[in-house]
Image 1: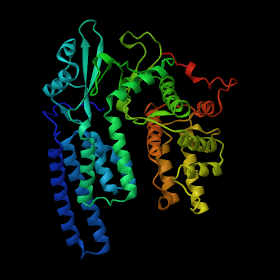
Image 2: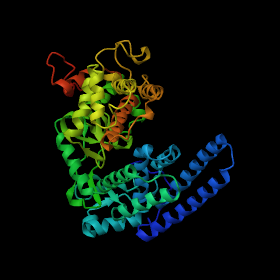
Image 3: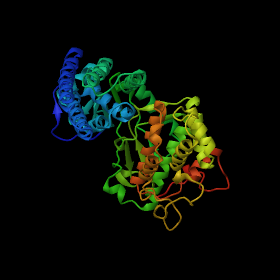
Image 4: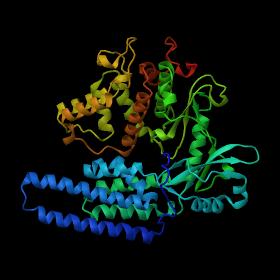
Length: 481
């Protein structure tokens, strides 16, 4: 959930199914007419000119439709955001680029509308126990967050309030957006697209299930209760409902803040290690992963501030609406690929990719090997040796420099050079979100400007505790301020 920009708010959201479908249908028909006209007038142009004009038209269409989706807010915007994440395999590049701009939508709902929701959900008497700040501290596509103070004891809390009608509109909104893409001639329907659409539908229903999110938040709080490096808000059930999550307010600085940047290298590296190990625990131990690594879901609590007793920095974890549970059927091949990459076993990396159904033994052997090598290169910061590390990615102490390594760009260039895109299959949805999480963790560590080798941590989770290596038990290695 992003911080709200001041001055951008609306008094209501179009929640009526007919009203929203009418808006989307009108937009789709208009876009479809524009596309038909474009195709008719573009027919007699040269091939190169036709391609350039078609790409320009796709961009124009996509921007127009994104503007329409943004005006409706609610689940329509979230659907667009999810499509941007997973739609690259089904939608033109111009469409996914435009859909990504929906992530910047931060319009909030005005206080009188939110106050009506609060009274209807928890009751006027219960609401009177709280002094709620009418100005939201965060706004997103499905809801917004307000700070509050309990009058009886001064407890600081936050109320995550779902926009009215959003949960009920998920199915009709998704169907309307799909029809919009079809009418605007931006997508071709087929079995793979329909399957993908159903995955988006299931994700959306999880996103609006605030009871599930509240339970998941508490579950993660319990699982991390013995790890002082992390803070998870405590859910307050007395103020929580199907459409409201109340939890303790946990202060902290944004990941990219000046205060965090000014921490010493040792402290920033400790925070990076903590984030990496949390991912390993999710993957190797729990099988449950928070797949939305948006930096708005993290805060850094700096040691010594606001009367803090601990003398070390901690990560505040927020928003557990995107937690995915993974089966062993999926996790085992993933872990096989990680272990094989660590052991430089290209054959087993390929075998894991085939088991995950985004590689095939029908491919030419050269393509399989190149794809396997791309997968292995992702584990560069976790490798046993430094022989493959670029000089600029290593500091004077032999530690990996996550920011300076430019690993994501190098992997992308390697993949492009390998020409594997002609063979690449649509990966299972689980892999898409796991990959998103991995990129998010790497980015977090890089933004911290951390410098450390991840190999001891990975080895610990691949093979178990190594009592001869003092770095293996990093949960006990908390860097003090």
